[in-house]
Amino acid sequence: MDFPEPDGAEITMTLPGVRAVFEIPAFHLTHQFGETSGPGSRNYSCSGIAVVADSTWAALEARKRLKVEWNEPAGIRESTDSLRRKMTELVANPGSVIGNDGDFDRVHKSAAKRIEAIYEVPFLAHATMEPVNCSAHFRDGECELWAPTQIPDAAAASVAQALSTSKERVNVHVPFLGGGFGRRLIQDYAVEAALVSRIAKAPVKVIWTREDDIRHDFYRPPAVHSLRAGLDAKKAADVIATGAAQSWQLENRAPTMGEGKVEFGFAVDWMRKDLSICLAEARRNRSALPVAALVDQFYERVQERGGGRWDTSALIHLLMKP
Image 1 (tube, rainbow, N blue to C red):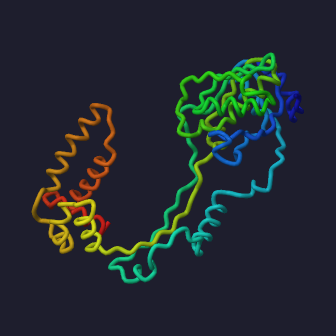
Image 2: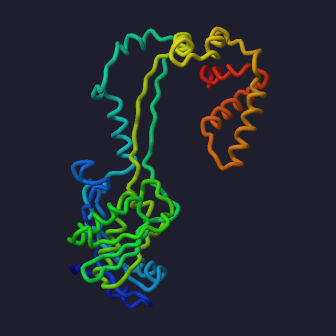
Image 3: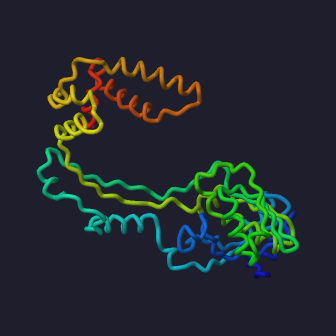
């Protein structure tokens, strides 16, 4: 399989250590969790230019000399700002109803306190500790991979599909990942390494720069959420106190919490003292207590408001006056 050389390849080939320069096409990747997980994968490897050299430095320096004229699709006009505007417009209009249990509008209007908020989540790159990379050696119709992948079977399947061979002819070794974080569920870098090795007729190691890694990640998707809630503190306290949760604290403190009385009981200072012992011991044992750490942060905010000697039920102040 041969691909055309890009403009500037002839000049680049004269640089020290450069062995080859050629185009790599995009390939459809197999579903990372197997085809039974869904109707095919929506993921593709990136088309681009491969520079094969004796060292990473030589390859990166040669890449700077290339003059590539990209055939850009219509989607190139999309941007973070344009997508955010579109999502904001969509969330402002009524959406599809997934479930409807009760008369929300009536209850919301009669609630003691009404809250409306919009939450946004941006595009997020996985930013693994080590940018994606893969070593491959294609020879005699078989391919051997050294791929830091979270799903070796998916790497073998995608590489086999790109090479038009069987999965049994792809052997995958899995070294330390350098951080998976979900990014290495996608096998584009393994496919690239296999294709480059086949064209170069030599073992190769494909390395992405950190810039490549951030720019061409399979991003976690953005979202805009519009939420409305009606709160009635007394009713909520009654439900928690007498319901399945059976909260003794709320059953005894709910009336005083509603009246704003917090000058008694188990003081916030004492609670933070106890929490600090738990959190310090957890750190010593390299354990994580995320909920305890979060509660400690809330109590710290109460202390900052001068509530060190208030009862621990004073957390209600953070909800009433955040």
